[in-house]
Image (cartoon, rainbow, N blue to C red; front, side):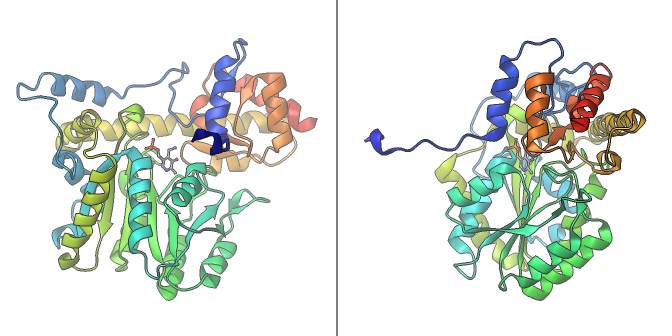
Length: 402
Ligand code: PMP
């Protein structure tokens, strides 16, 4: 039976982390995996999460029962307000349904299967940005979608190719599904400005496209949860129906706890019953119920004003450190006189920087300098710290000079 099974293509990021783990050189710097590290290069448990852990552990009514099929209300209600705004008319008009998922990946998958079953027209394709998070294509194809790309990165300036993006959204057949990164685009760190989001919304409305947002970095990108939700709230205010996949992996540092949500906004409250029943059915068929522990931690933070304020501060600390590292790397490359313009490293936002280094340069950095980044030249800026940033800048400088 198994003799018919072909080898699956290797996942670039997972392969990279195996290579990096096996490298014991003292100079090694892992800029591959998208996980926050503190200035000593260690994983960081947010102080607010430490407090939530204690509260959950000491809850006299605590237990390990299954959650309901929709998930933990403290999480799903809190997540709704976080994404759409506490005063969102869509919430008060009861046009939003939120289901807890297995982090952002699970939210993407439930959304992908839901869209595969109910998309209109049935042959609509899903358009993803070029480039995008590697797992998007895999998730969408696994769910049975045809996947197409719209232009996104201007590989010359390492900024947004807004004209190419709008042109591609306009040229697509009507009523396609468009996957958009809500903020802190992975892998490029390039986001549309507010004015550009309005242009994108205009074209999407003109062409009847359906927005499917992936929001994996809210608050982590700028330290401001409202600013990072700008695009989603704009589309809701413009009257779009949409889906939002939300992850708490990065902004709460709950990576392995697999905490996330999928939100559906309908144009009419009367539609929520059927939509929620289908999302519940899909979730029941795949995970039955979502994981409880991370949901309790995140729910505790979202429901308590004091903890919420502390969380925002914790996110500010992460986004500030990342911003400092961006500017630090740019400054070092500029003072070394490294050929090229390194402004983009500071201009991009979120966890990643699309450096513009070629595959060949990435190979040399890995093989000769023990510096690990993805083949497309993406670095996880959170992997930089005061102990390795000089080494990284000198290594990049040497490789760029050839
Ligand atoms: N979407 C994007 C764009 C991401 O970068 C990530 C994390 N790498 C995810 C979704 C989902 O991650 P997780 O399943 O860990 O929440």
